[in-house]
Length: 312
Image (cartoon, rainbow, N blue to C red; front, top):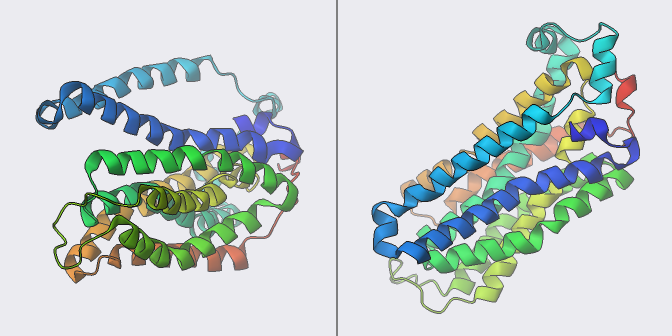
């Protein structure tokens, strides 16, 4: 929606503001959880208070519904509809066309699945690692993640705007590759900065280097902004208007919901099965590398000033 309202030469910049909302949402949720915990106390929060943030989210769902109801179709789609060229069956049209079906698969393997695992690793898995593996205090771990998110969020806009200048693919592939190469060194550095006791891993940590931990998570958030900042503009420019929403939604949601969403679960499984505290990183590293290879070979860098009206 935002992409179709944006100028062709600033599409990455304007859509990057939308990309900030997922990370800002995580930041706000951490704040709500901490505030609820402080207000109720640890015992009450653990017994029943943890449900309150979920109830609060119902208000946000209602607000989202009202906002969506008030939105009008983009000029690009209205023009298509007026000309009688709008698709009557977007799902069928998306996948019956061999070339479009091919682009959906390439978008998944060469962009969104790598973007999904980088997004989840740099934020959710980092929090899991601090709390569960390194035994950093619950509240302190949330503060560390929140601080890194706050510092890193502006870079969504930086890389979105940069993609208008140099292209989407370069930034996204670079982010995937650097993330894959850097994860194990970063998490080893986090282990050192936390003061983790290898002789007694279950011992809670009392004096971690908070500044270093915030910085190390911040680096991971930078990777997130590189792959996620330009992704909306990138996907919009892959598909024609009449099937754009359907065609871009499938790879986006599979890449994030399935490949990305499984990062904490698969990471936990690998760590528990192998006893290797870094084994949880093998999955996101592998997926990010696959995306780098497929995306680098199969995705053609488009003119980043694509006229969406001329894609049909």
